[in-house]
Length: 144
Image (cartoon, rainbow, N blue to C red; front, top):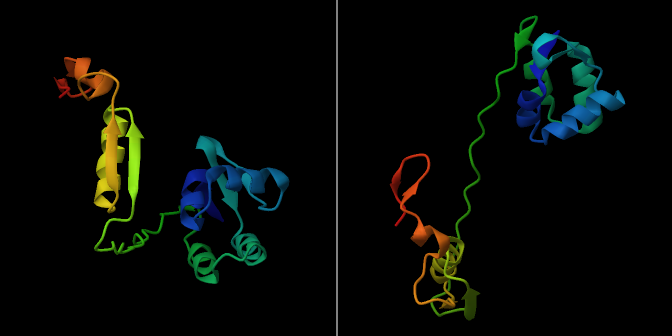
């Protein structure tokens, strides 16, 4: 028997937790509920489910070899590294309307991507509502 939580299995399989819940409710994954929001599934049943769903057999085999009632440990996956190559000359121009925190961040991101950016704000200063705050939660630091 393999004991798991929906969130742990979802993370391990790379799907959303609602997808795993729907699999259990529809009967595609024959798991039974236990205490503490945990589910139990037979090892061969889990292998069959993985085969039907096209999930890696290595994941199914690793989980099936787990000790009885072992709680699954999520596999730590390496993040996908994507390199972005920017052209030497500017791509074009963009106008960002609003000089609040989101507008300033969007302006910086677009400028880093190689665009000419025009930031338009209706008032004399930028920062939006954040500029009016004295302290911010939870650190109680100065807003600006």
